[in-house]
Structure formats: C-alpha cells, structure tokens
Image (cartoon, rainbow over all chains, first blue to last red):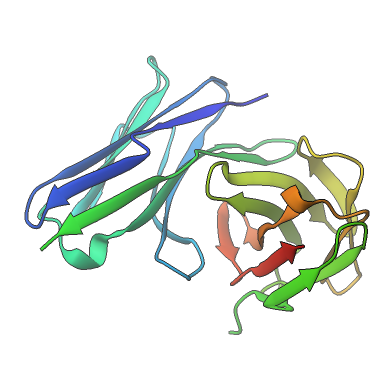
Length: 113
Length: 110
C-alpha cells in the first residue's frame, strides 16, 4: 500500500520567514496530493492541492511543488504570519477504480511573532 | 450548505465497553471516510464507505467497524474498548477528490 513520510514533525520560524514542509510517497500511481491545515481544536481544512500532471501550484503565500520522478512534494509558505501556526498534513491520493488517501503524520508549525 | 456533522463531540467510556459514533456528510456527498487522530500517529485511515458499501479499509483490528445508511449517514462502532483507543475520531465526506472533515468526536477510554 501507499506510505507517506512527512518531515519535519515540528517547525519553528520567525514571523516573516519562509517555512517548508516535505513529503515523500511510495506508490507511483498516486496522482493527487492535497495539503490540509488543522488549527488547534479545529477540523483539518484543505489549503492547497496539486495533481500529478502539474509541477507547481501557487495560491498567494502558499505554494506546492511536486517531483514525480523522486516521488516527493513540498509545501512552501512565504512571509509567515502567526495565524499560519497549525498542524499541516500532506496526503497522497490514488484515484481510479477506487480511491484511497494516505496522510502524512503531520507537521506542527509555530510562527514566532 | 451544512458541513459535516459528527456526534457526539465528546465521549468518555470504560475499558471493555463499546461505542458508536455518528457522521452526517455534506448533502450530496456519498463517500464517508473515518480517521483516528492521535498525537503520535497523525491521521490514520480506518475505512471508507460509498453508497452503503465499504470501499476501503485501513489496518485496524476487527473491533473497529462501520456502516453507511441509504441517506449517506455513517456510523462507526468500536467494541471492547481499550485505553489505546482514546483519540479524536474524524470523519470526512468527499465528492471527487476534496475531503471535508467534521469537527470530530473526542473519545476518552478510562
């Protein structure tokens, strides 16, 4: 089955700096890679996603890159703000006859004002 | 449009008991997945239901079971509770690829 490794598990950055979270996956058939943000006490919410036919996607201060050959994808947050503090989960999604999602273990990001 | 609703929000059970959690998906969503979230293990997939059929299953013991009704509402049951079952249980409903999570049920086993 699919295995998703995510690192680092915790990350502290100064406000205004950039943060990068990396994930690797094992199943080359995975074709959809969402990122979820979970603030303390709240539900995970989709913040950005990328499909296997795209190498990079940006949405304001957030970007995701995908390297299919190396089977890894990364979340980049620029100009971090205190409200970016949360746990971020990456996921690898295999869609086809049936769909299966495997999540990474999560990265706790702390943005220090 | 109402979001994914999970009940109850909090639950305290004793070892050996059984528990049933409920999840009402977003209207029109036919896929419901269940996840166990613990601090050390992240989000672990339990199972997915689609049109009343279990479509996928994670690596959890048979004590964990679920079902889905014709209105897409889903229930998850855990029998013979163990201390290690204490966790936040999240369900997510999905259409196409995006999963929408509920607030979760916080289960504490004492």
